[in-house]
Amino acid sequence: MVFRSKLLIFISIGALGVNYITQAAEWSTVRSSSSVTFVATQEGSQFQGLFETFSAEVDFDTTDPNSGQIIGIVEPASVNSGDAERDATLLDRDWFDPNNYPESKFESERIEEMEDGSYRAHAQLTLRGITNPVVMDFTFESSEINRGNLSGTVKINRLDFGVGQGFWADTSWVANEVNVRVNLSLEQ
Image 1 (cartoon, rainbow, N blue to C red):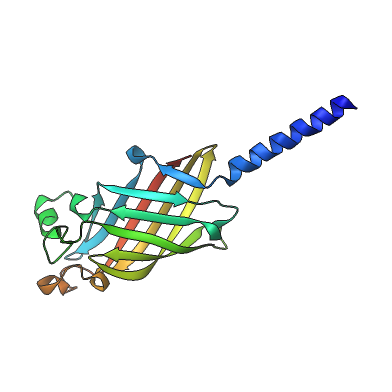
Image 2 (cartoon, rainbow, N blue to C red):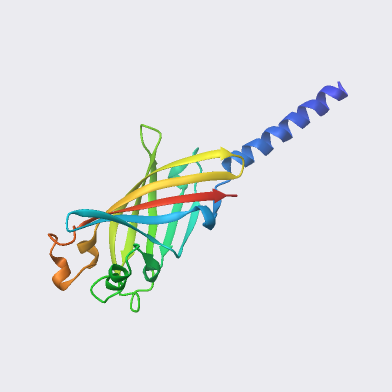
């Protein structure tokens, strides 16, 4: 009888431990294997770039996605499109203007699970001091205990944020739609 009681206590404690592990929700970003990239179109040809300086706070649990939150901050001055002339233009006042707007911020307000098992974060994006609602569709995978991956896409219209003013507002030269891709390796 004593043995059975101790066994039940052990199993109960073990179950509580497993429950705690699966419901832990705060994740840290592994910078060396994470990225924030974008795809834009210039003169009908797509090009890709990345932001070398960014941070993310992820509080997410697949068993309760509605209580989760994702906050991401990008430093536009860290843009790298692989073309020095284009990067210099992106830092101009008509584009990112990082001297006046050193950070862009994504902050989710609500996360929902989709029918296919992916997720959708309804968020506010602040870029060049302008805040607009955006949606990030993403997947979240947990490959092993304490490791995860969040991979998502945000489609934005750059002109909604004042990115590319003056001459650059002509969308026949640079398309309005930009796809931002987020790939975060996470650990607890």
